[in-house]
Image (cartoon, rainbow, N blue to C red; front, side, top):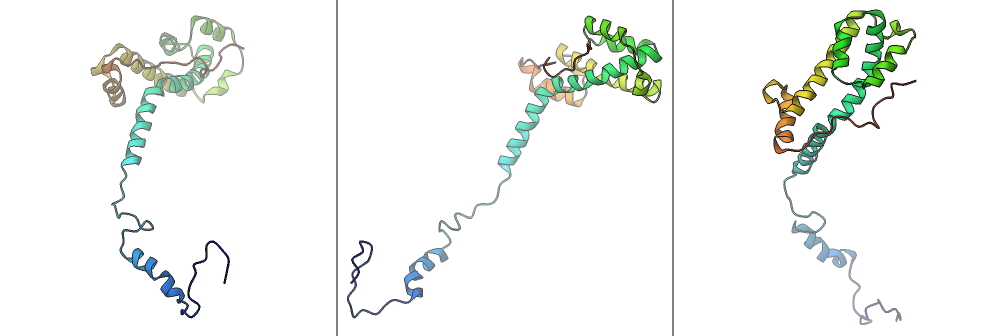
Length: 182
C-alpha cells in the first residue's frame, strides 16, 4: 500500500478501472456544451473594435491641426523660399498672410540664400502647393471662428464634435513645428 496523502485507499481485490471509465465523467460533462472549454456560444461581436475605431477617429480629428500644421510649415518653408526667390508674386504674400510664419521667421526666410530652384519643377508646382497650404490654413481659421457654413465635410464634423460644445481645438504645438532659423 502506498503511503501518499493523495492516494485513495482501495480494497485489494477491487478491479482497476479502465482509462475510459476514469475519464468518463469528464467526457459526459464536455458533451453537454456548457463546459468551460467551450463556454457560452455567443455570437461574435465587432462592437469593441467599432468603439475603438470611433475613439481613434475622434482623437485623430481633435489633434489633426497641430500635426498637419507642422507638416505644412515644413513644406511652406520650401514653397516660400522658392516663390520669394524665383517667382515673386501674390501667392507668396498670401502664404505669409495665413500666419503660418511669425514675423521673425519671415525676416529669417527673406535673408536666406541658396539653390532653392531645386525645390520645385516649376513655379506652377510651387503655386499649387502654396494654394493647398493656404486652403488648409483658411479652413482652420474658419473652424476656429465657428463659420460652419463655409467648412468642408471634415471641418463640419469637427465643428459638430468639438466647437459647438465649446471644446477648444489645438491649432499648433511648438515642439512639433520645424525650426525656420539657421
